[in-house]
Figure 1 (tube, rainbow, N blue to C red):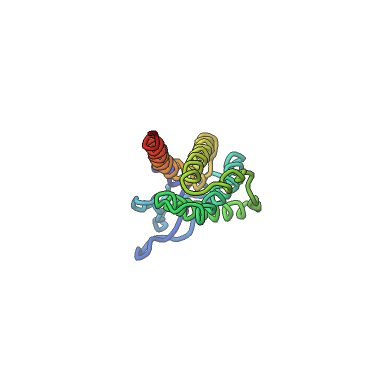
Figure 2 (figure 1 turned 90 degrees about the horizontal axis):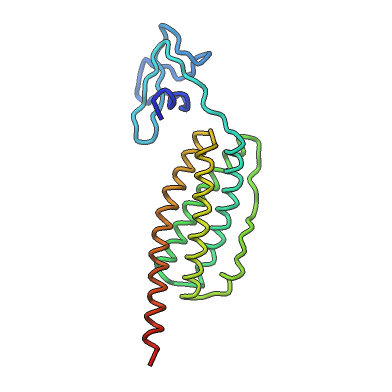
Length: 214
C-alpha cells in the first residue's frame, strides 16, 4: 500500500509528546494553508507521517457487502473451531493437541470479539451458533480422537483460508483486510503444524501395528 493510500485509510490523531500539530481532521479533508501539520499514525511497526498544509486526507474506504459477509461467516466458522477445541479436555492428554486447542481458543475468541464489535458499528448483530457436526469427535478418545481432531481442524482451517482469500480479493474495509491477512498467515502456520502432527500419529499407528505382527 503506498503512503497516500495509507493516509486515506488512517485515522488522524495527535502524536503524544508532539507540539505544533493539530489533532482534528481538517474540514473537507485538506490541511489548510498556514495551519499546523497533522500527525497520521503509521501502520503497526511503521513511524507516523506528517500531513502538511495543502495535503488532502481522503476518507477511509467504506465496508462493502463482501466485508459484512466475511465478518458474519467467520464468526460462525470460529465458533465451530472453539466447539471442537472444547472437546479436547477429557478426551486426550497429548501435549501438542492440547497446545493447538489452546491456541485456537486464544486467537479465535479474540477475533470473534473484534468482528462482533465491527458489525455492531454497522448496526448489525453477530450470528450465534455454528453448523459443524461434532458427533463423531464426541465419541472418540486418546489416539483416535487425536487423528480425527487434527484431520477435521486442518479441513476447518483450510475453509478459513478460502474465506480470507475471498475477502482480500473483494473486500474494501482496511480492518477486515488486515484481519483476513492475519488469519491467512496464522492458520497457514497452524495447518503446517497439524499436518506434521497427523503424519506422526499415523506413523506411530503403523509402527504399533507392525510390532504386533508375530
